[in-house]
Length: 90
Image (cartoon, rainbow, N blue to C red; front, side, top):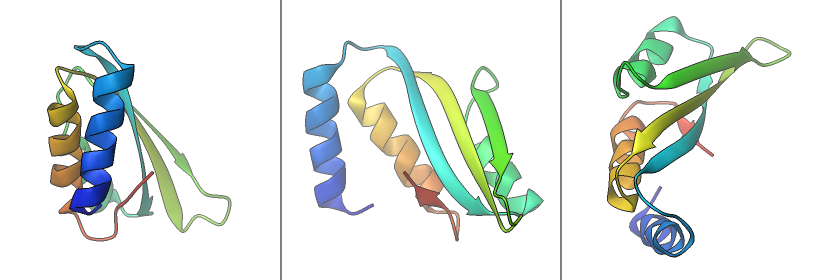
């Protein structure tokens, strides 16, 4: 995600939501246990993480629900996860 996308997301989250709240993140990664572990490590133990394998088995969909304190906390999480090669945020 680039800075314009982050700024647009920050504006949208600031206008539409009351904070803190549970936020749902969605990611697509190559089906790789190491990458899955790296994504999970970016979230707290209290986060609710679910995963689903694609029909051809090449990719994993990851959904994470975690209490976020502010729009900036959401954006920082996206930035942290984007450091992992091959991860696509939805």
